[in-house]
Length: 242
Image (cartoon, rainbow, N blue to C red; front, side):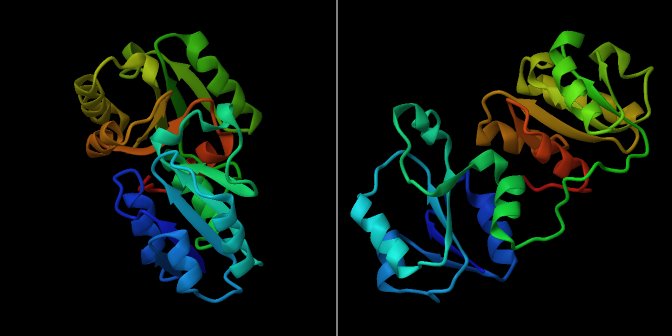
């Protein structure tokens, strides 16, 4: 069971909220004050505070929440406007920090609402291709995956038509200049990559671009620096809603 506190309609949080409510194990309160004044069970194990921006919360209010739910584990779901927050201090002590673009891996694992995610090495029907502008850009990802005993190779875009087959393609954002390029590349690869799944590795995720990339056929989003656990979880699932 999980209590979601705060915004559940923000575009960056919408997918996470849909997943949480479909689990049938999630309650919602609009604010911390509402969670205190209209309490759910004191024994609730997980409390998620959705924060689209850096707006501060009085420390006394958060302490009152902890007193109301003394057994809970706390996490904050952070929107893009919270980026860089830790450089100016560490607000929200004792809360795990989960950025919006990592919800489908970190939130799923933390909440306990879904026990199907796995971080073991996946069983693949073919090699995993790391598509990047140059081999040295993709070499870090290749080294990390090979260390986890996952067969993979760095691939230049022009090699895709003659190499393979691939079970998954991890696209580094260095190889694509515009959104139109992403869509064109995805369509071109689909013609010769068969059932390969597409994953996006990007430095600065933005929800508008990610939703467009989803429409182009990409199944998961991964931010840099590489989070190996999220990559493994993605490769172990047939579909990721991000």
